[in-house]
Image 1 (cartoon, rainbow, N blue to C red):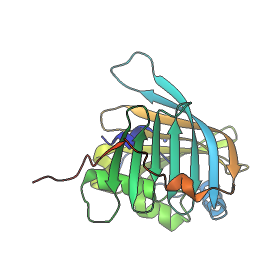
Image 2 (image 1 turned 45 degrees about the horizontal axis):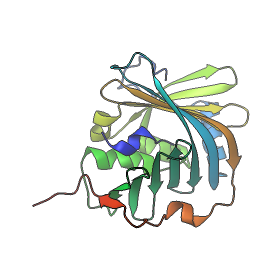
Image 3 (image 1 turned 90 degrees about the vertical axis):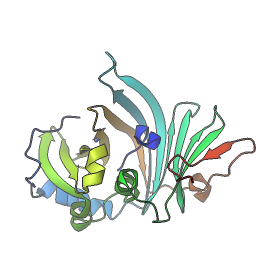
Image 4 (image 1 turned 120 degrees about the vertical axis):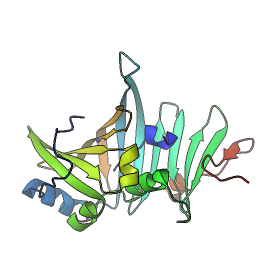
Length: 228
C-alpha cells in the first residue's frame, strides 16, 4: 500500500452495505455540493486523522494541516512539527520524512501503470468540478443525511484502484457545502478518516508549498522504480 495513502485524501466511516453493481443517482444535495466546488480555487484546513487497523485494539490519531490548489495540487502535513509531508508537485508526488531525512518520489509522467498509479489518479482529481467528473471515476453507492451533513459512499470505477481502496466516503455540510470529513477503506479492512476543522476558502497560497526544495543530506528513493 502506498505510504502517501496514510495521509491523503480529498479528495472517506460508515460504508453502507450496498450492492456494488448498483449506482445511486445523486440527490439535490450532492448536485448542489458539486456546483459549489466550481468556486473552490484554493482551500486549507486543520485535520484530525484516525487510522483503524484490525491488529490494533485502539485506533491511531494524529493532527495536521492540508492545503489544496485547483485543479490538483495539494500538501498534507501530519504532526506538529510535521512527521510526514505529502506534496503533489508539478510532475511528481513527494512523501517527505523530515526526521529520517528521506523522500519517496512517485513520478506523474503518465508512463507508470499498475494499481498504485490508478489509486493515485483518484487523488489527483482534487475537488470534483462537476457531476460528470465525479461519475467518471466513481460509482455512487449510497447517500445518508446526518443532521446538517450529507455522507456519500463511493466506489472507484477502476478495478485496479478498487483492489487497493474498495470504498471512499465524503461528508459535507448541506447548508454551506463545505467538506467536513473523508474516509478511505483499504482492501485489508483498515480505514483512515480525516475530519477537517477551521477551513479557509480560497486563501492566497505560496506556490512554494507545492514545489518544495530538497534539503541537502536527504535521500531520495523511487519505491516503484523498476530496476534491471
